[in-house]
Image (cartoon, one colour):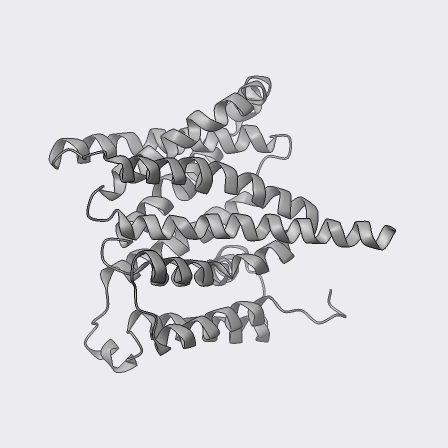
Length: 304
């Protein structure tokens, strides 16, 4: 009986993680699909505004109760919001103008490697042999991806600028993930998440206003409205709940492994909804990137 309950517990946790990852993969499809109809800053702003509206009813009490902690940690919360909300997703939508949804998700999955490198630079954390090999695999995988399988094109620096924006976005998300390790202990997850949503949206507003005044107005047809609701309600709010449930149930490490299936979901969706081609270079890039991430995070049973 105990084993059955434990197995049910594990299955539930993996399903939570898979659900969150599948929802996030849709964000990259929308980033590509709406690239011609909604500017990147506007899409990011409307996404987070919807997310704020959805999360507030659940977070209003924690926000009031923990206002003193929020005020005390405002510099930390502001910088975290800037990295994880304002900059990261805006770069994703900017990258969607010039690269494919599959490339977006593949490059996005490299952020754990940047966590290793940044942690080494800032906190002098040891880079083991496994981590070094993992970084090498991921680097080759990314280069293979952005050069479309022709590494000699690096001599002419001929690759999509969107791949570069997405690579910067992955670095930004790595910084955000490192900042999460220093989250104030007494701040509840609802207060933390809602305050970062609101601060990130606030930081976006001046740029949104400038974009709104300098380009033609956005035509909000049913497709655009449904897409904004999707990224605001599901990719921001629902996926966050599922992901946190997964971490509580099966732990961060196991949940992180599930996250690396992101390119598989995005590739599947991009093939069917955007008619994007999948070629052999995507296959080898996926194998190298995922192998590199697993290698970098592998520890022997004795170390564990």
